[in-house]
Length: 256
Image (tube, rainbow, N blue to C red; front, side, top):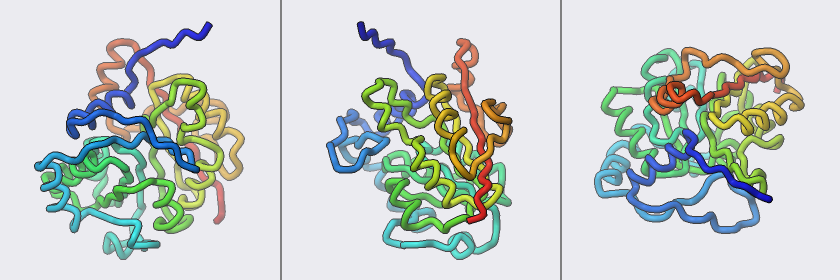
């Protein structure tokens, strides 16, 4: 007998936030030849979101059409570059960029309302060390990001795709891990976090056997939440309810 237990994870809440901002419903993904780890949401941005998007894109926006970029040219300096995929509405990424002005950050998010919100927050905070793609991360990694250069790659609370038949849609797969390794410099970190324990176990199962990576906490161990990852309000609420969050950090040993 198949019994499905329903509850909300941080990723569910991220989706709900975006739906509220977008004032639309989640649609089922259209079947294509490639398996995507995200669902395509219908509808358009609100007038206010579109205004923020248009006003700030010239400052913060990067596009697939730009082709292969040079971080030093994009940011006007040499620095450690942190990449983040799936930043939701962007508050935590903006906070990280604000708290680490010596580093540069690039966020990748497919949903325009989240991108619009991130750019608005960055502009309000006077952030200059942040750029954003509103595109599929796989395409950006393959066609735009420099190889073996970034100091960190962050993947926080990705969709766990709870149902077994949907597990193939999880973004953390062996091929994805190698794609991440391709954009990380030797000694760079691949940092994941999830509040769904079976997904944490799955992430570790995938990563422990990947060539070119070493578990920063020790083989088979989870990493304590590092101070640079902001504690979200949802995590704080989850902690009060006794819910767990699992961080995994793997160091790239690839010499490129």
